[in-house]
Length: 232
Length: 348
Image (tube, rainbow over all chains, first blue to last red; front, side):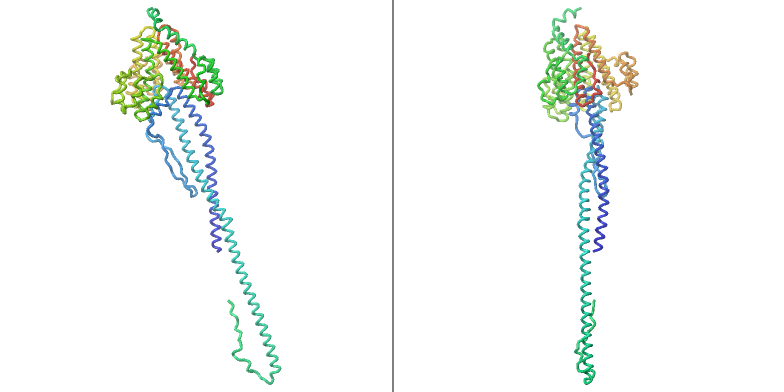
């Protein structure tokens, strides 16, 4: 029983440590998310402004670009990151293949289009980063809730239960001991009484017994011989 | 002399219309009030005081810059078509030449759309209205570029451009942008030829100036924008129109331009282009802006002469610049980027 209590307490402290570490990581991710979102706002603003600039210089290139789309140029791959035992997915973007719009705006507006491509590329990278931060945020949130639930359960349910059981056992044992003690005492008292009576009887007999002598037929082996009680 | 006598018989009416249109271009004070606007509805209000009138009246709110741009272009197209309807040869041929530019853009759009199997009705929707031609819906029937050429393009005026500079093999392999620029080069040279040799006279003189500038602008732009891309030197040389001032330089010199300084050095020989590269690092105006400014200057000058067709071309370009300016101002206001709002090129 004591072993169980010890085990529960150790588990509790370990889990608490895990919860604290996760909480720390959680807060840092939250901060990063806030920063990234703010940067996102600025970058999107810059990107849409450079779109306006490019439109001014090149004319309407929207349709030409849309028609020439065939496959994605930026792809995302996932990686698993381990934080205090929790697997968090991290997204990384990489460029697949050459830039198929290299020659767009060749005759006019090339510079603005290049700037536009760079700006929107930055926006995409930031978006991917934000995506991984948000998924880790959500996953971490779940795990922290679970861990905290476990910590609280151990703290408020398991350990008191074990302690109560322990206390109960101890109290029972004490009571048993007391009962035994009492019994023993009672038996001893009875023994004393019987011995006293016997002694009194014996004395009386002795006083009367001058004519009966010792060893009357009283003492036979059938007289109860008080064995000493076996006290376990 | 002959011009003065015979011009007004056929072309007097369109000329008066076009000069009227030119007078109604926005002035710098009107641009000034536009830049003071706080919202797009203010812009709508300001524009209703100009020649545009209530062209945005029936638009459902909220007003976006895309809607404004579309309506402005619609206005331009209707005015241009009015001029076309009221013209006879050779003015009508001239105006047709002017539309070939949009024609080329539409054809490229349809080619790339067909190559990637897009919905044809959608593509037709996105085509520029000034470049529409009859057999356009038939373009989507073809499934590769060769077929496209053989079925449809062979009947259009663009056939010569295709034939002159691209072979069937080239069409399939080349990047769509290279095709576009090759067509444009052929178009410019053809137009130049038409103006200088067929029309001659004042038109020839005025258009020569304008088209030479356009050709040189393309040469400079293609050169600068192709630094660091996969476009090889020979391909680049093939994209240079031959009707510009710069194209008279030796090919060796042209292909030796490998960075901005080399381009600058070559342009220093020409007085008009020197100032384009001056103060490149310190000034806020980019090269594109300076090209626009120069273009506007040349176009305005063409109105000082009479009895020539250059005014139609110039008016179209100026009107386009005005549309770009208005859209720029609207975008700046919508995105709350007031610092850059004066970066447009005023037309008056």
